[in-house]
Amino acid sequence: MLKQAIGWDLHRKFSKVSVMRREDDGEPYVVERARLDHADPEAMRRWLSRQPPGTPVAMEGAFGWQWVADFLTEAGLTPLLGHPPEIKALSKNEAKCDRRDADRCARLQLKGTFPKCYLAPPEVRQIRERTRYRQALVATRTELKNRVQAILHRLGLLHNFSDLFGKGGRQWLKDLTLSDAFRNELDGWLSVIDVLGEQIREVEAWMNANLLEDIVVRHLRSIPGIGLILAHVIRAEIGELTRFVDRLKLTAYAGLAPLSDDSADRHGRRHISRFCNHTLRWAFIEAAGITVQSKKCPENLRRLHNRLTGGNKFNKNAAKVAVARELCELVYVIWKKGTPYLENPPSRPGTAGGQSSLRSEQPRRPMVRRQANRRGQTPK
Image (cartoon, rainbow, N blue to C red; front, side):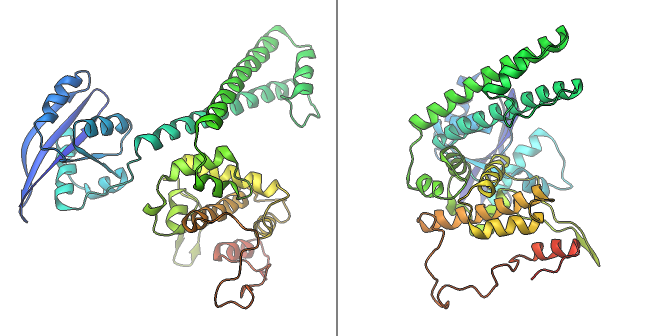
């Protein structure tokens, strides 16, 4: 049986492509190689029209893959997205050049070892663009607010406002007597902050008016700390829950699963990975910060936060990550079961009145026990 696949090595101005075939269990061989210039889409369409419809096109999930995936779908081909770290591991000790990179993707696809990752459909990518745009605006506004606080710090000016950028704080900033340099800088940052605030409000108004609140979003909003915006962010970033076999895979994808750093008798400090979906991790950490400050915070999450922070005195960031991990697992369970959040869920079969075998104050995770022992505490 003759099989054919296309390897696609994407660059900013051009792509190197390789057409490979394989007969039965034989080795794949190159049929054709080409360079496709992105500035000439008509030439790209003519070249792709010569390929059989439905031919798989394997490419790395590099920056800018979205438009190529849509272009290939329009041409009647089947784009496949590869996980870059796994492709790099599979290509260890092999030559590195554009031609070889395209050959490698096609060869892995024909052998059935191409490490595919999730290729979000266009409608999901559109929502992601909106939510990520809002996230970038908020991050930029926060940076500028910190610059304003830095000006006051350099001048030794103190204030008692809980929100310096509210009505009272802005009036106080306006009445300050400053030199021309500091006044121009302060007014400039404040004007940019106002523009960013208007942009954020426009994006949020569009989201409230256009994003459909399906059953998944409604169930996610029932979780304390997750509102409309964060529910849509989590919904879009996860995409399809079925691609995660269990809740641990989802926490790893969100970058909230603790990684060990042990060797022999040395027990290193656990940490979270930077190889993750950063937007999804940001959403869960934001939700965790809102949850622990809310009066509706679930009792088990409040106990977890208080235990790791010693009553909100230390390790606040680590505790927030731990709460975010619990929320991530909770999202998986609620989404999979298709039920809203219940603070007191019904007892499970096989339990005596729904009572857990663990005491209410007992740490449920080895990581919690180890951190307690490191601080000289004895977990109950």
